[in-house]
Length: 376
Image 1 (spheres, rainbow, N blue to C red):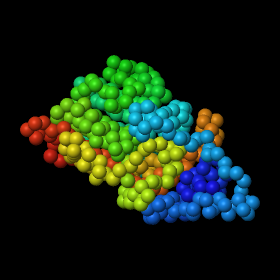
Image 2: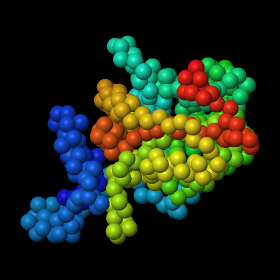
Image 3: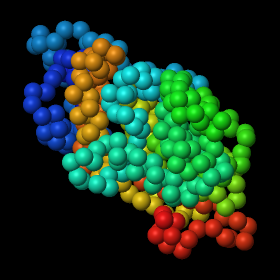
Image 4: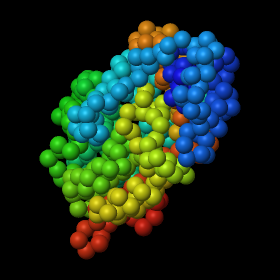
């Protein structure tokens, strides 16, 4: 009642003041017009007017503090220090918690669902996604791959095991790095895979034969994106490929006339400072950096299915997840993943793999003329 918009609705749910009896997806479908309204400004009543009326009627008491899970960012937006704070807020929740949500694959990005048999599940779809990336990059033994935003090391492990490449993975999350290093050691791959806690802006040991960036560029921000694209171009050798896997805004609302957007649930609780741009903007910025875009694959429906699988994992181990974090944090994750699944299904957001090449000086790309050729 004190914040009659998307953020207030989220605060009420996270704090436990508001709950959903029955199917959460059905509830979110019914609230879709409020959450994803077509108006430039989020739909709400004037805050002061609502609060004054409720206080006058004696319905509510003093305005409550936001739940502890809500974050207030400090410092300059997208500075290295603030980016570390944002990444830590989301990813340093505890590896055991992520094992519940993500399952055995520990891959935190859109899976690639190629099968529908009863025994084909999330782990299979994530394996197929990792392999799709490796085939698009045409990895070969002895090549050197840079994985920007390497997460828990699943792509690095797959590339080293299945394609014989050496991998440098970078992340800003210390918990991710610890988990990835342990997995790599157990696989006997420490000589071939290095995991660093490092900002992509500080990488100086290029060039690399190929670069992957999967689910990381959303954290970069629209302002610094040109710098991000330029750094990846500099780090890639001539003739090398970049695979950029990124969530995109679909048909975004125009900027409000005031120039100030109301804070969203995602920004306050899930991905602080995260920004989604239309895929056309991303392609233009990659081309401006010098890349030649060779292929774009939309995976929107795949992400909706992935998110529903993650929600099912969380709900199946709800009590354990609450004990590993907090009731509020667990509710944040359930709400964010279920709402995101609906956003993908209804076409509010999309996700795309953009394959680029750093062509040679004579214009040679080194790529086969058809998809069938470079996906063999």
